[in-house]
Image 1 (tube, rainbow, N blue to C red):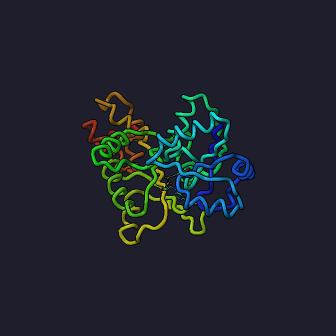
Image 2 (cartoon, protein in one colour; image 1 turned 90 degrees about the horizontal axis):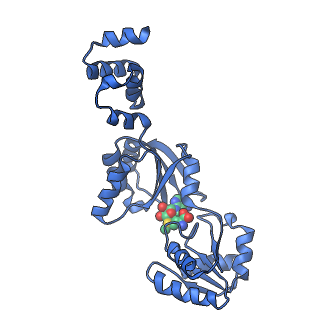
Image 3 (cartoon, protein in one colour; image 1 turned 45 degrees about the vertical axis):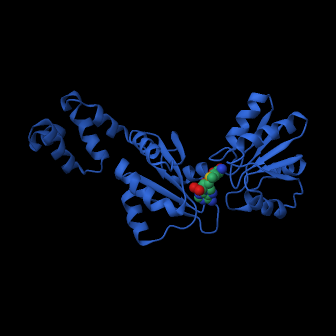
Length: 276
Ligand code: SAM
C-alpha cells in the first residue's frame, strides 16, 4: 500500500514516531527531491531505499510505483516538506492508486497552510486554500477575480521573490483587507504579522522579504456582500445600512453621513431616527 508521510516544515522535532517507524518499515520511499530528503533520512538514521517522484515524472513514475505496490511492496511518499499532496504532485499518485485499487493511508503531521491558518487570528471555520496563485497571467487574473467575492478566509503560498508583486495584486483586487503574513513557520525566526494589505505593502517597500511565506487574508465580509446585493437602500433598515459602512471602517458619524447621502435625506434625520 501507499503511506503518505508528512515531514517537518522547518523543525525536525515535529517528526512523529509513527512516521519514523513507517519510513523504516516500508520497502521504498518516494521523495520529491531525493537530495533534500536524504538529509532528513540521515538525521533519523533511516536506511530505506529512496526513489524520486516529482512534478516532471509524476505520471510515468506513478505507474511504476503502482506496479511495485501491486507486486506487494509498501511505498511511503514524502515531499520536500509538509503534507504530501498539498501543493505538490502527490495528488496524482493518490488518484492513480485509487484507480488501481491500491490502498492509501495518510500519516498526518505538519502542513504549512493549517499551521498558518491557526495562527492568523482570522476566522478559521470556513477557509479557501489557493496554494500558489498561477504564474500564467491570464489564469492569475481569473483567480484574483474569483477571490474578490470569496467570503471564506483565503490562504495563499508565496515565495519571497514574488511577495511584493502578489501583495500589490491582492490589494488591487480585494481592497484593503486584513492579512496575516506567516513567515518561517516552526523555525527559529518564525514571524507572524497581522496587518492590513496596505500596511504589508508599506512594510515590504522598506524591508526585503526573506524566507517562506503563507498569506492568510480575510474573506469578503457579509456586510460588503449585502451592500452589493441591495438595489434600493430603502429595502434595508437604517440599522443594517449603518452596519455596512461601519464594517468598512467608518466611524458612527461618517457612517450616518454616508447613509443619509445614499437615502437622499439629511444627516439629522438619520441621527434622530437612531436616537429614537
Ligand atoms: N506540502 C507542503 C505543506 O504541507 O504545506 C507545501 C509545499 S509547497 C511546494 C511549499 C510552500 O509552502 C512554500 O513556498 C511556502 O509558501 C509554504 N511553506 C512551507 N514551509 C513553510 C514554513 N516553514 N513557513 C512558511 N511557509 C512555508
